[in-house]
Length: 93
Image (tube, rainbow, N blue to C red; front, top):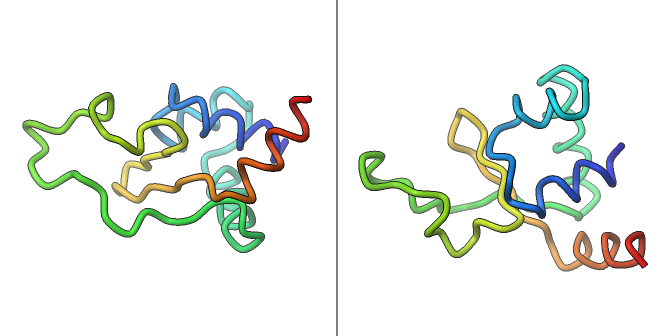
C-alpha cells in the first residue's frame, strides 16, 4: 500500500490526505502515518516552502512542484525524493 501511496502522490492528481484515504479506503490518520513512515525512510520529503502566500491567487496547477506534491489541509506538503522516484521506477518496470 505504501507503493500505491507513492504513485498517487507522484501523479499530482490527489491534493489532500483525505482524498488519498478515500482512494485507498483507509482513514486519513493512517494516510498521515504512512506519509510519516515514508518521510522517515527517505522516500518523501516535507516541503519547506510552498508557494501558498496568497490563497486567492494560489493554484496547484501552476506550481512547479505539482507532480509529486501532496498538500494536506494544514497546507503541509511532501515531495518525492530521488530515492522515492527510484523505487517507483523499479516497481513500475
